[in-house]
Image (tube, rainbow, N blue to C red):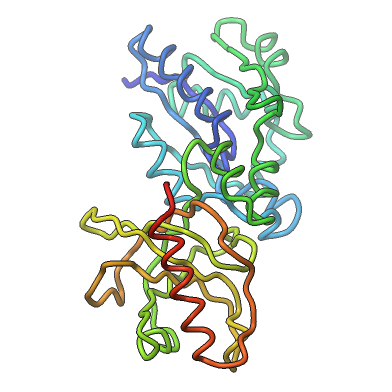
Length: 292
């Protein structure tokens, strides 16, 4: 029977605070020959308790799984349902963490609660299950601020990718398939990959960014990224478009990972396509010269 060291939660963003918890989880698991395991509630708990899409996601389930497993940690999802919200914390521990997942060690975030009315926390679980090992992580600070998903989200919404990335410990990523767009970029000499992101994924402030695209074969390309509704064109629709510098080829239908590094300028409307082309050239030069 596989026994596990477990932590539970949403872990949206897998930011530096989450990563500190994951590292501690791995240490405890290794010391007792247990499997370190993240049990993630999907969809986000606030989508059921509040409204779908609020808050927008920093990491889709697929992105979260990819990142956590890259750390050498098992990733398991639990469907977050109305019936689960009514389950007492002691029943949740017994039925899921102990019986189903064979948990022996539990690691809590500093503010994490579980079970009906949020009555399950580090202290109540220690009291109800004295035979289990439980640990609680302190809040994680970076440059004097408690790292949180809300803080990261706020920075991204403001277009402050440098700040967001500092708290994430890595670039903010938009992943998705390349879909057919208006194909105007190709006509202007700057073909773009129109990336269809996951539902409820947080889209940064509209504007132009320096990014880097990773293709399915692992190759990376510096990119100029436009996010917004393309106000210089008709039939405006939200799009995430990346112009891959020094790339030639067809990307339609391919899955791309787009990492965003910094904000160049806000989205703007141009009087002519010639003016738009001149600005794109300037943006490309900025991206090429930037130090990532």
